[in-house]
Length: 436
Ligand code: DOR
Image 1 (cartoon, protein in one colour):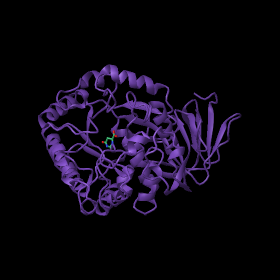
Image 2 (image 1 turned 135 degrees about the vertical axis):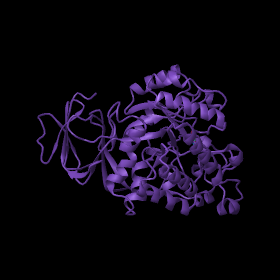
Image 3 (image 1 turned 180 degrees about the horizontal axis):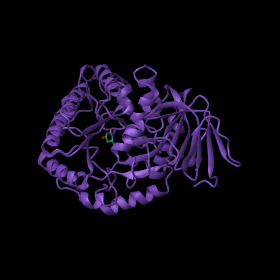
Image 4 (image 1 turned 90 degrees about the vertical axis):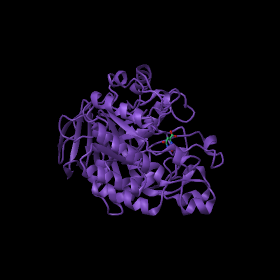
């Protein structure tokens, strides 16, 4: 914790579920002490200028690969958390596809211990099956007892419907949420990119949209059968959105996220043969992007989540067909999403922040424990993101706090930059610089 106890965030526009208002924000002892126009800075307070900026509850990422243990050349909990803080996040959910997988209470304890010293709050998702092998259920109850709220085999979907049915039944009893990576491995087998006109032209084997949609349809049927809630990770096709809309209309307890890269980039990028554009699910078509943006606007999609997936430089320098899938994204998520949704006029600023902050906080249960996602009212935990929507910058992965460099936005201009991030009142990022 900083030795200062008072921070004044001065001159910004505060956003939250209730809308926007011009106001200063006074933080004392880790909490919001006052919100209002022209607040005086107490003696010795740190004053953070926020003129022309949005002052949002800290962002919450439902989908972060921190790679520790086992993948420390790509990322550590500390380096990933630093990248998250620079991106305006106050909390992230660490995915369990580490080596070994986070599939037991002891693994959960180890990663939570690593997270305890990190710049942002690190929550942990547990695996649904032992070793994410899709064969036997992991001990969901003992992980839930440690506060795990989301379970996923992400990187893979649970292929065995009977096993997933059992997992959903346990999850319902435990009041936790299963999060599915929808990919039918038989349909996707061998596919390196989206199956469509670009895969044909490039001669790269494709995976069909149906690989995602078939598993999503099956999972929605299992939610109907069990009554247990389910969250769908990184949905990427217009067909998936139609399935989700029907499930919603039926009143099924389903939530879903989209990534910034699926909102911004099409499969045409793969024409460069640059493995930085290889990701799972793959980049899709312009029609899919239009449907995903419309689903953000209509509220069908609940969250934007990064799927920050760091890989070592040499792995991403392999040929396209052998390079691992994944993209880093914590530091660019808000700017990329802003460009796709706010600058295009599809969403208001507060609707954009809702997808990145309070709605994902609620899905992860982080609104309760730790008070992420605001609203920024007196007494609330001071998790804050201050975002300047006007600053233009060129993405330079060599300056990333991540240990990896695989940003699909490298060399591109984005608009809007996180200036300051507070986590429980600690100024972890000030003027765009991480403070430790
Ligand atoms: O592209 C991806 N990379 N998709 C996933 O689901 C997993 C992730 C990873 O862990 O690298």
